[in-house]
Length: 241
Image (cartoon, rainbow, N blue to C red; front, side):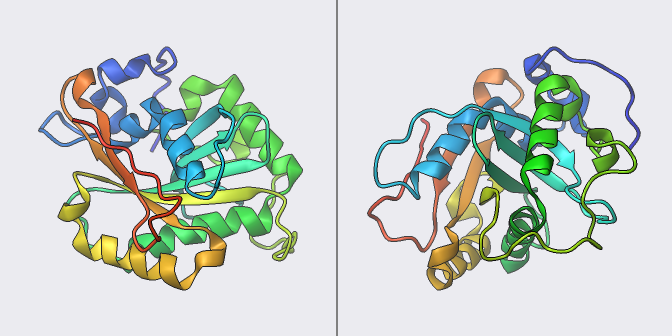
């Protein structure tokens, strides 16, 4: 998708989310707009799930529709990059009625998480963070963010490069799948997440983020953040009335 060059004050585009969503105001949500608006709150709840003690507040920079590696034709829906530490959160966004609201959505989120763990070093983390901070309008626009936008054409790690280290990743990464509705609306996806979280406890749980997407700003909220299959102690859930 070509960048139209349209600019928006940071986060103020949420007053008219369809202006960047590529969708018509037909009652559907731009899930990404909700995730950007509530970026820090979503990140805080996800991180709290893996921490037994209260964690200090961390500011995150969101990037939308982003490619992580040169030569990789796939793009990540939402990437949160921590402001002051080697930490990212990847988000796979699924529309209601999508055919892959099951283990395939979970695998996609895991794939992006593992790409950062295996391929990103301090340079990649710094460059993407600087891009998100210096070009916030561009970072949250609906146009794709390519590696070439972050690096010049001769830099940036590619799929052909060697792994940095699978055993000691430079960047810590969490993951979630986001949908519009409530957990009960996505039983196959919830079951797939529970199965993964039970079988891969050491990797950290993949969260299910359910959002509410309405036509007014007050209606665009986080319905819940949960960790299917995770035992109750330490689990974090956010609900809105």
